[in-house]
Image (cartoon, rainbow, N blue to C red):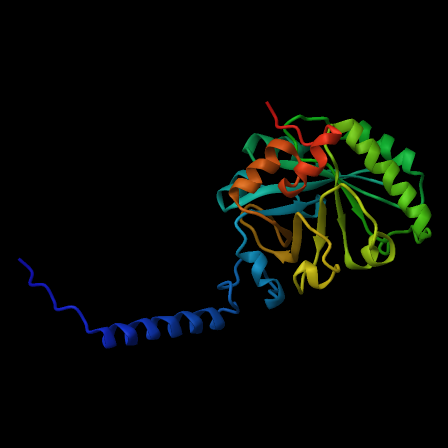
Length: 279
């Protein structure tokens, strides 16, 4: 029989607790983390987005650049959702979209499609292209309208605010009619500042902010998804990938999956016939 050691004094316990706390802080700092723990899964971490890494519902967004994604492996590593590029403009489809769509579903990972809006073709043409190429799957996440300036494409047109908003609302309406789900708006700081700031939308927002929390860059625009890095590293994904966080906890996430709506907006949106719980 092993003899029991005497309990340490209260003073001794205080010293032990303090030492443990100091050690934890040193570990976090030495690994590049802050208040939210060590940085993981990011090749070029920024302390301004520490909070995102600790949020419980994590996801990725992918396009052809990630090539053959192993969604099963990514899901096993803690990735809860994926948004994938489907269409762009009036005539482009991501070459990996169809295989990504099927493989993500087979892995059990919730997935949604996004359309990259261009400013050199009509919104009606882009809507028709999206409808023709993106399946209306009842189990899919809401579609996403990606709103940015087309700085890296041959299209250099920048419509004025009124024209841009008209095109955006045409596209959002078509996407909602096609899928039966209220689309999500993805945007970055520049486009939000130039076009979206101050505008009211019923849609959930997905905001890009890789060096600070969204409220520091978007004047307190309520967000549902936060794209917090473009240099993420995730098992099952080749190279770097955008990483994203959902705003809430597991219960909030389950509500979102069941309704397609941000849980905080359901009371407001339900009278319009949206946000009906899946049967």
